[in-house]
Length: 405
View 1 (cartoon, rainbow, N blue to C red):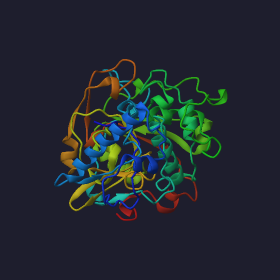
View 2: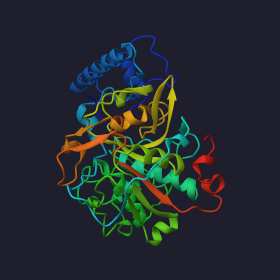
View 3: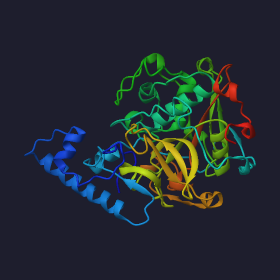
View 4: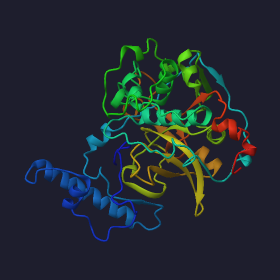
């Protein structure tokens, strides 16, 4: 199985099948490799390339497949290199409920008010400008920064949040998802950091795909206790600081675990969401189509931005924006199978690998996760006040009056 957080790039932008089998030297030219022809590394990379190419060909030759695989710049990567890209580990909750946040039970939603197809893709700059995390395991920071950018654009003004600041400065004392930075963290930690410390714009601190020293003026003295996010209810973190207020940010929410309705309605009536997901079994070689290789017992190990849902040829799907560049997948997006509402709610299993899927010190040995690839389990959304002249101020927030409803 290939790594979850492995960055994929299409071999061709036209998505046309190769007229003949790609040779290794052609791959080297296309992706700018410079292995010495007589070195052990050359032989090792060639063997990896041949093995992965055979896997791609087997997948594409399978009858009835719903998605297409392609050669990309990860085709010659080792399993260890792919694992190093993993940048998300789920927040581990203690067995008892936490305190300190506002918790409420999920309210009733009428799904009949929602359209059968809906997406923020192409509506916002945040969903047009697909970013590339490169070789840093910073998917958690990219998903958070991009969701923040989308919501700022919707409720305030277009602001491109600095991913590098989030990577370099978000504290992670409980080692959720690694030790922070390029080794991994979570969307909750990123949102908490920005709500307390603010965030520069990308142009002022551009992304460098590495860990840089955080200036003392940007450091937090009191990072969030992740054990506060416990249980299946909605949890709201309200920011009372002037820093967040200057951004128009009022806080953030963790939506109820494993519940479909709050996710659909929040996505539709508020904006894109930061979600965790299991990105194994082919994400690295995904090209186009509806990805349906989602088992029930999986390890959640990646963070992305959920932008919509739809249906094509009787196949329902979730639409997701990744952080592996615009040449990966469908212009930087992937469609993941979405089942009928009741079936999606019941598509559940155990995540039983805490060393990969959790990462926080202490916590349960397994977690119950639901939805395709675990998409319903851990969902985070920032909250902003509505500024005059913003997208929402112009379009309103009544889902029954939303364009396309």
